[in-house]
Length: 172
Image (tube, rainbow, N blue to C red; front, side, top):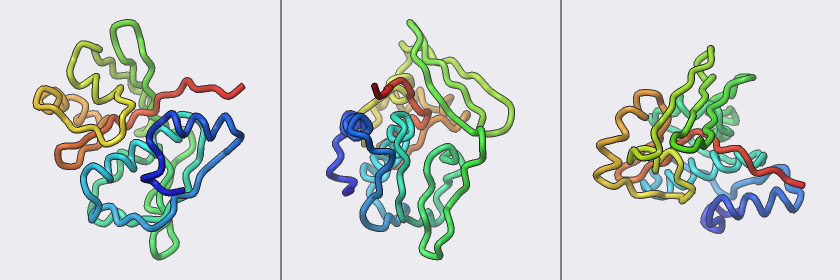
């Protein structure tokens, strides 16, 4: 599958409902050399695939990028054949929508943490965004510091994506 052929979460939902359990991304992704929008779109694809139950097999190198916050997502197979990171059993980062807030549950660092984000905050738009390659607005940028402290957002240049997995699409 080509990364650019996927338009968003809806395409992943369609694959899941068609019986797919996983996808293989074509090509090798040198993450430090990717454009900001493309890199953020890749992370959004990994997040959304996890949310709809698809596994993603892909090849890539992280270089000096800080990827520790991505341990709950499918890792790339590096040039040397090893995985860039290993997901530990039970680690997750999940966001659920409440009436006026987003509830994030994080078990990536051992014990369970919960972070609530008011949906009226500009940062909530980034955390809850379903668009891939979202360009951060100035208001969102000022508000993202709290999310960054909890490793809940991945940013590259002027683009960013909430990395908490939004579950809730169930195949029938």
